[in-house]
Picture 1 (tube, rainbow, N blue to C red):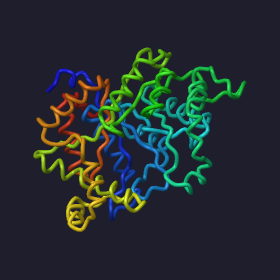
Picture 2 (picture 1 turned 30 degrees about the vertical axis):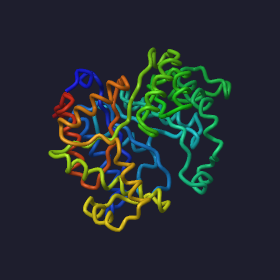
Picture 3 (picture 1 turned 60 degrees about the vertical axis):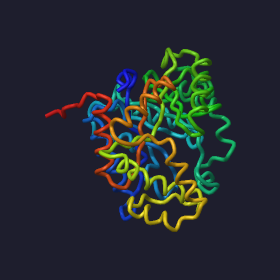
Picture 4 (picture 1 turned 60 degrees about the horizontal axis):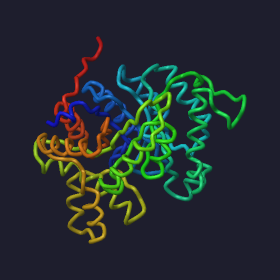
Length: 343
C-alpha cells in the first residue's frame, strides 16, 4: 500500500442504478442502505446524483434523496454529485441546501455540475436549452452569494435558511469547468472522461489558477473513479460488465437500460457487433479492478499522478452482494476506520 493512499480520503457516489426486474423504488432504497454500509465502513462522504428521464437511473431528485440518506445515517457527510445548476434557479438550490444544513449541521456538501438534460425533450421539460450551461459561472456565483451575503443578481433578496450557513461547495468539471472552479475558489471533482493525461492537465490548470476563498483556502481535488475489488481479477472484471454493457447499449441504441446480470451480459457478447463490442472495451479500459494487491497498486498510481486529496468511488453492478463486499474490501485495503453503530 502506497503511503499516499493512506493519507487520501475515500468517499462514495451512488447513482441509484436500476436493475432489470426490480422497480425504481428498490434502487432508491438500495442507495440508502449503501449509505449506511459506507458509514459503517468509515467512508468520508456519501453523495447522490441527478439524472432525468433515464430508464436506468432512479436518482432524479438529489436533494430529496440526500435528505433521506442524511436521516438514515449519523456521522458520514452527505451531498450531491451533483445538482445540475442549468436545470434549477440558484435561489431554490440555496434554499434546499440551507434546509439540509439546518437539519443536519456540519454534514452537508454541495456538489454542483453544469450538465443538461439527456435529450431535447427532457431539456424542454426542465425549462433549459443547450445554451443554459454557458451561464454556469454566473449561476455558481449567485448560488454561493446566497450563503455568504455577496449575491447581487437580485438585490435585497435573501435565501432562508441558507444565509450565514457554511456548506462546502464542489464543482464537477473538466476543461473550462475546472477553470470556473479555480476562479471561484471551490473544490474540484474530476474523472477520467477523456483519459488520464487530459485529467492531469485539467488538475494542473485548476491548481495554477486557484483563487483562495472563504470555503476553500487552498485547492482541493477529488478524483472520481470506478473501483471494483474481489477475491480474483476475473470476479472483479465480471462486476463491471453490467454497467459497461449498459453504456454500450446506450451509445448504440440511444437508450440507457437497467442493469442486467453479468451472465446476461456475457451471453450478449456472443452476438454483439464490432461497434458495440468496442464501446464495451472502451468502458472497461482504465477502470480500477482486481484483487486487493492489484487495486492497491492502481490506486497508488492514480493518487501519485494526480495528487488527489480524495477519491470518490462510483461503482455499479447488478449483484448487490458483490458491490457491498467490494466496498468493504476497499475500505480495509485503504485502512478506513470502521465505525461502530450507536446503541
